[in-house]
Amino acid sequence: MATQTMSDIMNPGAINLDPEFPHAPPEWTRGGAEEAAQHDGIQLDEDHWRTIKALQDYFERHDHPNVRDLHDALDESFHSKGGIKYLYGLFPGGPVAQGCRYAGLQPPSGALDKSFGSVQ
Image (cartoon, rainbow, N blue to C red; front, side, top):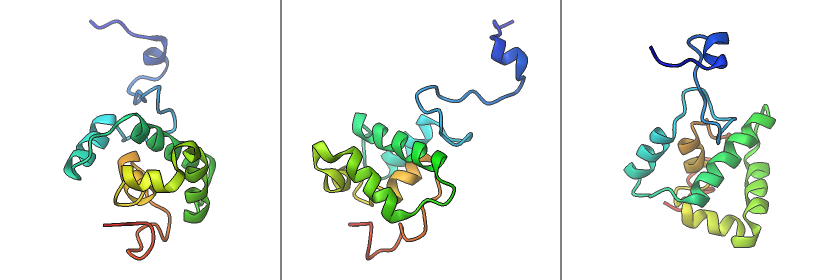
């Protein structure tokens, strides 16, 4: 029999979330994100993971995420590396739209508009 933690005993059958991504949706996994990125021809690096975590954290704090506010928050978080322009290099499908897909989140309204938020 496998050793049980106190969490296993207190919450039998509970989903164990990734401790580095505490605000991830319950069904989200790193493997799923990597698989989606690989399908898009993207190898996730440290800044991809940082963006995914930032998106999950943002969605945890906001009931109705606004695409413009989310863009601004990401721009601020990556300002030292070039802001949103840098993020479009990491996520050619748009840092909000493509990033949300990798983060297991529903993109906010307007993020999937082909004339805004995507360079593909």
